[in-house]
Length: 517
Image (cartoon, rainbow, N blue to C red; front, side, top):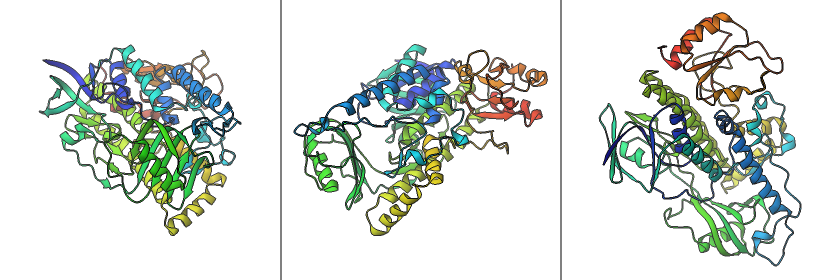
């Protein structure tokens, strides 16, 4: 059976679903195929950063984000409110005092070195105007995937599970994809199929980087014998481990090479042995609820596009999970690529627009890889690395260092190089209340760009008028006084132009949105 689509997206994780939603919102006929028959329940990322929260907010998902965040916090508070049961399993042996509420601009860790919230300057300008989405970041990967799956259903995106891609042919004008028993003809193929990407391998992308040197295991278990084990991130002579904060959650890091087996399910015996090697405590695990292995394999494709095949998320870059950057990085890829690919498919932009996808996202991915490599270096057990860890721990107890790391963790320092000296160009748009009762973020739900005219300039509005089918011209004033600066904001929330260079508006419009009809 053959069928035709504009785009085939391989992978129905959060990245693939986010990309599919972006494409469908722009009117693109997209099909998602996924080899797994059901969502992966394995414990993964526990939260999202500010750019991801804002990207979802711009598509009208802030209420869903807030509900997921509040539900997670309620579960956490309920667990911490339970009394200790010394004779019971470790899953019920939790502190009687509730944990401090998670603050989106405070806390976190670097290589397991905790940041003290009172050292972080939350009044730093980088934390300003993030909007209400920035307060809803305690959203784990499973909750985010469910949210995006519901959104895909709402938009009419077909998601076919239990379908594995076995091959494809890129003839330069389209791609014929073998999807199980079906062959699908598409204009474009996008691999969002994870670190062991079939699409990446079949397309022949280079994947240079560093081989792994650690063996990590993360799990949620029921166990006994850990009642006296310190909670949180801990360093030992043989590695690093995490116990908690949620009951039964354990993580071990051993630095004597990657695990020999990455395929078979993680067993209770394997977790018990690793936990004992790192902590020195012998425990008994009666039930493995969720478990996974990980390494610090660090690789990135040189270019995210090869012909009519593109990659996003872990298919394009892999690294250790420290800092929880992988999910955020992948959603950022999808938000950047979606509107551009849609514009090319709909004939509203030349194919060269896709060159900006890799040009903008590759440096962000490279930074994340560097960030995770540095954390692994600080986790090593040799005397020199432990001395360096001691120095970095002292530095992170200072306001300047803690604030910088917090900003990096929050993702608020990301900026694309769009060839402008204007410090605002290439950064994410602020979010703020408007006089008509809406927020700026509310005006991106259709997937269009926005020209925000705070200078009340008829000339600027006349220049943008020919692009009104793809750029919303917004003249509503802010609820509170702001600098009278006009902004051209791409569909992904990135500022592409400001009125500091008024005569460059038509060039920016044609660069990002093609020629008007």
